Every structure is written in structure tokens, then in C-alpha cells.
Length: 328
Ligand SMILES: O=C(O)CCC(=O)C(=O)O
Image 1 (cartoon, rainbow, N blue to C red):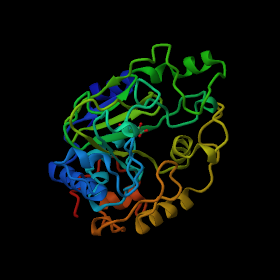
Image 2: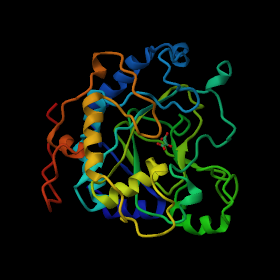
Image 3: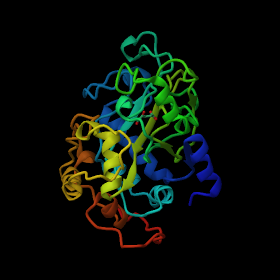
Image 4: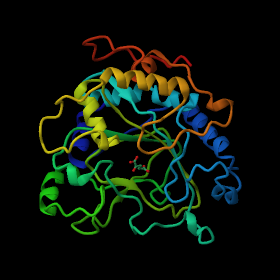
């Protein structure tokens, strides 16, 4: 699915966009789920700043909703799996049970939904920089649920920085004030906002500083996050280094793949999370707020879905399975 130009773009720029990765009706179902979960009226901008459920959206917009059937249908998109499989060179991948984002426009009369101290908006790494001197392979991704303009709180990053990461780290001389702080100098002042079309999948290299810009448009931004990594000890360890860094010793450059315990325990925990609709140990969200029939856990899974969760194993050695239509 990814072309040679796509691979080159990832290599040089640190991200790639896969158009039409999710069908319009599947995007619409996630969008409807967001509005109903948040108890907001898409036609009434005043309701966009209410957050009556306590998702704690405000400046960042990260929601507490992970397991709706619609979100699972997006995760099971064969095109998304294919794109990640092309990047990793294996089909044997697991998916994160990550969240959506709802980011309304800045409004002078809603200061608590306003800017943070950083004029760039959100810009960070998802791992502790001080203890991560060496780059390793890991990707994260966002699905554009609607057409999203460059001023609409969209994804932003520092294209190409991943190739400078190790040199930059050395030059810092251990001077990192917070875990994933990105200084306001050395060319890191102006991240690039990436506009996109509904159905675009944007995959980025985790060593590219990333986040989102302020929403200065008149429309809210809606998007869904996910990632996939190999369901192997080594892949699992890379994932732990980004999403659960406190569980591992510092990445001092020793070989990844040195024993990280519990691949099978992780598989069972993933199945429990899917079955119970929980997300107990993911570093970012607090438990999902279950509010409606749409949020009922144990969403049905397609054959791909069963494998990217960990219920079934991928057949050994198969690199190009037929694209399976999601049977939900
Ligand atoms: O809002 C975005 O697209 C970026 C989200 C982000 O920074 C993350 O998932 O780590």
C-alpha cells in the first residue's frame, strides 16, 4: 500500500499521509459518537465548552472514550493495518486502544479552554527525553475524522527532526528540565501544522516532536489516535518505552529486545481491556466514561480486529493477506 515515495517521505520528513484509509460512513459513526458522548450540540458553539461529563478536555481536548464499536471499526480498517505492516515489514501487529480528540476554537470568553504557556501549542515527545539518548523504531498515528484546516487545532510536528534526534540529545548535555520538554530554540520554534482530508491516516515517527496547534478557526477539530507495533518482545519493549516508560530502565543504548517480561501477560491484559471496556494502565487516559449503549464494551471484532487485539495470532509468514472487509 505504501509507495516508495511514501517510505521516502517517512524517512526524510518523519511522517506520511495515507488518504482514504477509512470509509466515510465509518468516520461519520465516530463523529456521531463523539458528539453524543460529550453531550454537545454540533450546531451550538456555546455547548462546545461545557464538558458536562468531566472528560477534562479544555486545553488539549483528549477524550475519555476508547471502546465504542465505531472506534473499533476504525482500528480494524484493513488499510490502516496494511500501512503499518508496510512500515514494520510484518503483519504481526497489535493496536493501541487510544482516544479521540475534540478541540474547539479558542474563544476569548473561555480562557480555561485557551492557550497554555507554550506559544507553539502542544509540542512534545511521548517518552522521557533525558533517559532516551538513542532513537528506536516506533510510530504513532492520527485519523482525520473530518476535513481539517491548518488553523483548526490540527496535528503539527517538526519534519525531519527524527534524523537529528541523537545529535540534538548529545548537544543538550543532559540539560532537560522536564521529561519531554522541547526547548524554544535550535530551530524548534515553528512546528508545521498538517491540514488533512476526512479519512486521511497520518503516521508519524515517534522521534519527531509532535502535538497540535491552537485552533484559531471557527470549527472544532475531531480526530482519532492509534498506533500499531509488532506483537513481539522487541516490539512490545519499544512500545513500553514510549507509552509506559516508568516500567523500564533507561534507554542507554543497550540492545532493544533485552528481556522485557510478559508478552503473554500483555496479550491477556489487552483482551481484558477490550472485554471490559477499560484502559487501566495506559499512561494518559483515566478510565473511560461509559454513558450510553454506544459505549457498551466487548465490541465485535473482524478477523483483522481479533488479530490486532491479540485474540488470534497472525498466520506465520503471511505478509500480504487479502484485505478483509470488516464484518461488523
Ligand atoms: O493532536 C495531535 O494530533 C497530536 C496528539 C499527540 O501529541 C499524541 O498523541 O501524542
